[in-house]
Length: 430
Image (cartoon, rainbow, N blue to C red; front, side, top):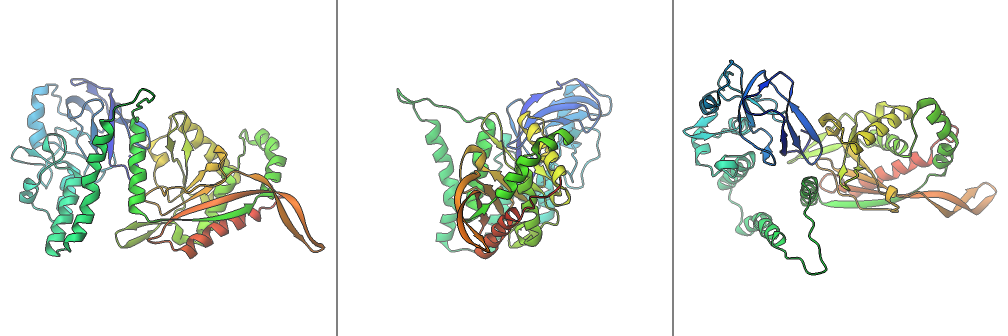
């Protein structure tokens, strides 16, 4: 369902229990903080069991339904199938997970006694050497006491800390956020509005965005560097070619593809901006996939991704930007449209803001905000002397993860982006 997505909300079951399901036929509609989507069936048969209903939240890796592939259409067979023959695609934790009752049993048991374990949990347990006996001792926080991925990871962390005890004060600091979070939520949910107040419940997407933003600030120590760029050449060039461009290409050319082009060039110069962090490891990405934050009519934000942006010319970037922006606003984005981003650009100038301090889109390590383009008085240097003139200027705000990006790298990168914008050729062909 996309990078960093760990759960999805079931918004609608297209098929009911007892219905015949064809291979790749839409089965269920789900929603995440990134995209709403129909999930196709991975098998052909009869839907005989659903483990989640509308508005339930399923974790990535959970079995959400059972499809009988042996011709049986009786719901009564579902429990036995669940306990003994439920199977999912082990190596596709991010794919829609539907069990097939006639599939062969897995090498690692999916159940112990009366307890069921999802494929993702079993996969983690197998890789980390967690025995079935250890799994049976875990207190599950999922539906009906089921052990979730979070439970297993928490157990692994605690198991590791038992062999290497940490000082007590450190343990208290680590536990504080988890203990405080539910209390804060409870206090908010019990709030009573006054006479001049109105309570507006967050929609599902806003809740998930809020969680993602808080997680990013807790994960990455944010630092922001600012640079002012003279984009007069870009403004004049666009004004000159925009009518001819639209006539020839059938597309309107905006400033966004020009900004993305400059960012892609700068990433090639400074590849250590194009990384993610995994514990004490830095993972450098070879592809340059630039996400562009897009405002939706609901007021929420989504970040579609332009894949291999460095390989596209300006016309190709323009078409990609326009297509993704339109799909986002019309709720037509596909899961692959929001996957694989390595760097993000957000245009705060479209709201009339001159600069901002954007929050990093995890698991990336940097994000660039471009401000409004304004006419400003500036000193213009010429061989005959300096004079004051009117120039088109804008601020670039670069937020980066100080764990792996120091001020020198973060500052040089945004300066290089500004240099590419200022050096834009006003005689350029499109």
